[in-house]
Image 1 (tube, helix red, strand yellow):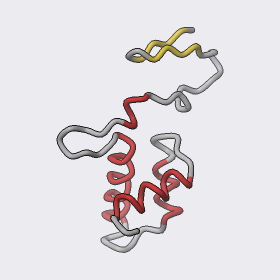
Image 2 (cartoon, rainbow, N blue to C red):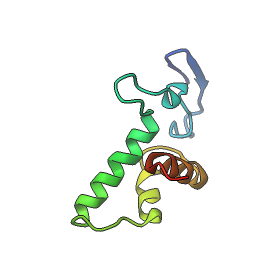
Image 3 (cartoon, one colour):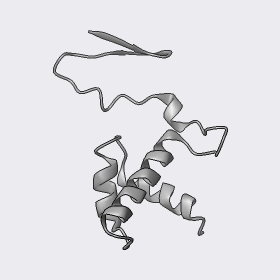
Length: 89
């Protein structure tokens, strides 16, 4: 089966998942706020978990578990993204 996404062409067997194919557009910042698609997903998951926990802090492990339900991301990638979004050095 051949799947074409934008200019990205991926050959996929029927038994393989499409979750691990990465779109290069996931890393391009949006012009309206400068967030990438991946950053937006992390922030949305964080917001949803904060609402679920009634405003309490969200453990990083819980956030990571929720994020990987939506996108394929390593722990290191998410941690560096959180540091960048928080703005601390």
